[in-house]
Image (cartoon, rainbow, N blue to C red; front, side, top):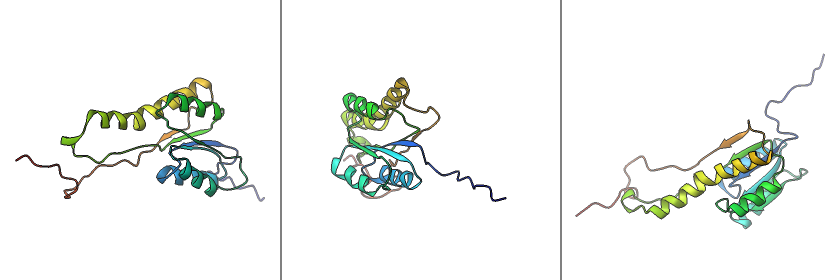
Length: 160
């Protein structure tokens, strides 16, 4: 009469790739997935902070870390090689630049587009092309935000 209880939140036996795992939302996502039993492949640009995340993962699983700049096609290809079988993909890599719109440059926007949109799309595409990714398990999180209230540091300079 004691049927085993199914845990709908377990990740045992699953491999999850988390980008942006060197800090913030990516780091916490990786730690939580590891606590739920997942094997993690973590990546981030800052090797030292990525190592800090790696040491905080639950021991016993065969976790993998790789320092990478996902705007680089070479780094994405290396990551796709390491992540040969992934059950879930969580994109948390991102970048924001606080700048009033009047002072915003085309290069700044191009840089943000490359890391916040192009890199995760191209990585996802490569993982799908290699057959490494379960197509039903892709999540893209963004902790990016803008100012929505009037505050002295949010106001653009006024014309004289």
